[in-house]
Amino acid sequence: MRLEEGWVPVALSSSIEAGTSAGTVVSGSEIVVWRDTGGTAHVWEDRCPHRGMRLSFGFVRGDHIACLYHGWQYDAAGQCRYIPAHPKLDVPQTIKVPLYRVAEKYGIVWATASADALLPDLGADTSIAPVRSVSIDCPAAAVQTELGLEGPAAVITLDGDTLLVAVQAVTPARTCAHVVLLGAEPQPVARQKHHAHWAEALRFRLETTSEVA
Amino acid sequence: MSEMSAAARFTFRGRMVCGSFTEFALHRARRLDIEIDVGACDADAATFRVRGQDDLVDAFEMACSLGPEDCIVLDVERS
Image (tube, rainbow over the protein chains, first blue to last red):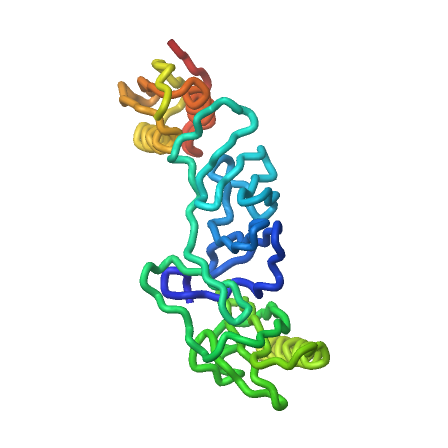
């Protein structure tokens, strides 16, 4: 699914700590996922309007992110607020980074360019424990088929636990599957490790299958 | 725009493809919040009149001196 088509899972919430940024790709579109020091997640086009540097290489300062290249600083609305080489410049409103709508639910950061898309409703958003994100060299449809998912995000039962698997199409040949444990008991470390191994085995199985095909 | 302190006339000389160079200049002017009037353009030169903040007019000159990939700017005249 593309960002224009609906809510796309782009990261585990736990993977984006406050004050950090990370780059990822959705159907070929490069995006930066960053979290300000107040805890709010942001998803933008991963490109500084100045010279095209990836903002995911930048630094988060409070509720701003600064480009690594020349230090241009952008506020939470994507508006450039400060250019170090021109400290007295009244930065025009036209210097702005395109941004996406963001939501956090089920321990996952979701993003979309759609104005009216609805977030997936997969039950209670409580007792969530992150498992892991796993990058797989195969199409998103192959992951969905392998797991019997009816959409890009679905709940499955595995070894007595309930897992949410959310599928991010990175490119036509690469997929990222974000896995979280729903209804987790307190201190579910052993179950997290168990299902992390399952996710790794899933990757091995799918990549081996695609090599054979 | 809070401060309209600079007006300039630029002539970019070199090997020009008028359509792409003009489109490139208009895009950079929009990005830099600069008012622009497109003047004469031929295979050797393109002329623009611009108005905006000093630093942004300088940035416009720098951006256009690089130009789009199908044009080569060899000289810039600013007045």
